[in-house]
Length: 380
Image (tube, rainbow, N blue to C red):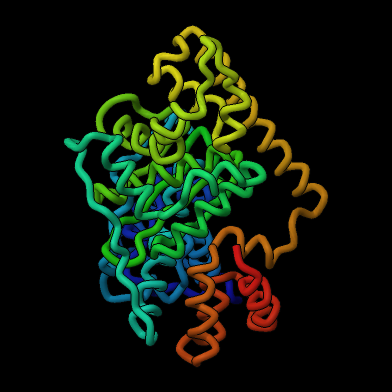
């Protein structure tokens, strides 16, 4: 009987939900196993949409069912305009990325609201920049703002510890750092959501830690320009993307610091220098080329190795999934970050956030609050 109950939704909300999720008419119709003509008729307000099918649409578009009964589409932040991919024919991965962007936008707005309602409010005093700036100058200001000394960076154990340290410092400075899954690295390495308070950076968890650190700094450069975008695997070599790459490289491997680490001999050990700075061999090779200590003929080999490392990381993650993967609560902490989770936990404990809201924001039931609280309290 439930299958035939009509869903008396607002037609314009059907259109809005589909387009903001990135689905074409034929793709949405295919998911519901109906004709394009039938699906288009529902969007024009003709009868036929049932509650059972609305439930499927709600899951497909990642919208609550109540959303479809609003009188008009809500005002929402537009998705990233700098959308690029090396696999433009893969609609499913593009949809997955758009949904991840929307999710991070929503979580950032939740964080901004919760912080505004709390006793302690911070303003992210991020240095501003322009593509007319010298990349080295902007990178120096950003590194000074982050406050990480070179000796501290060189003392980190490995790339994983380095990424955690960079992320922790960004969150201390008022930048939310999320990780997203379900999108191939070939489609997007990361993206950012700008704002004067609690801007957000999202990095692809399928990337190795060294690449995630570079992506975080690349997106930090975007935020300093008061702009946001999507970072794909290939990356552009001109315009704002090239500028942000130069800034990121200088933040992670300052020119003067690199010069002090270089030996007097003509040959340099790229692999060891990359380990010292906890960056990828590709990134170090680029810095050495800029310093005229390496020629371009050597670069392709390091880039090939980097691509192989990406595939190896992806294989490791798949193996973990087959073994059951990391503990779910710890995965939530890893993906959402300490800064965001502390805001949500404090608001829940104060009664500002309800149990259903807590579950919506964190994917953790309130029965897991104490466990989540303990993990967040452990530090990054």
